[in-house]
Amino acid sequence: GVLAPLGKYADQKKTVWRGVALGCSMLLLIALSVILALRACPQAIAQELPMLALASAVNPALAYVYGALLLAAMFGTSLSSLVAVTTLLGQKFPKVEENRGKATALMGGAAALGSLVGFGELISVLYPMFGYLSGVFLLFMMSHYLWCRRQEKERVQESCQ
Image (cartoon, rainbow, N blue to C red):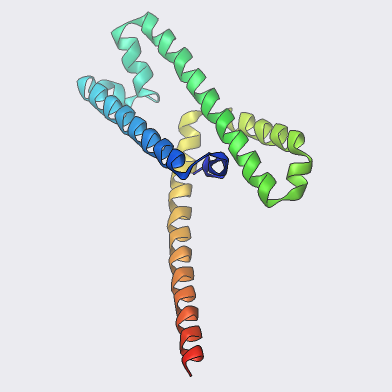
């Protein structure tokens, strides 16, 4: 969803769908790998970062390698999300586009401050909050759809009379 505004820069629609399919396939493969690994070592599930605990249980040196890869993955994800959000806000609000550098720095700073809270605490607050907001969003989206459908039926009835 965060990368959706960048889809308009793709050469063909087929490229966007291939990217979506590839991304979904990779996420599914990663999720299955994590689930299978944690089934092999269930005591790691109780840790705040279970896969890091699992890597440490296999070999302490592997924990450092996994930790470095995890930090690189978090940095890459945050950077791509920051660029996509800045692009989306720039499309919606001209002031953001005019001050793109400042907006990016401000959002990056806010994200860095948010990261100091701690992963477990942040997820324990944000995950349920986004779940509830998504439910409300779906209800509003459904009611808007029904409203638009009703308006369309009224227009058709008026044009027939």
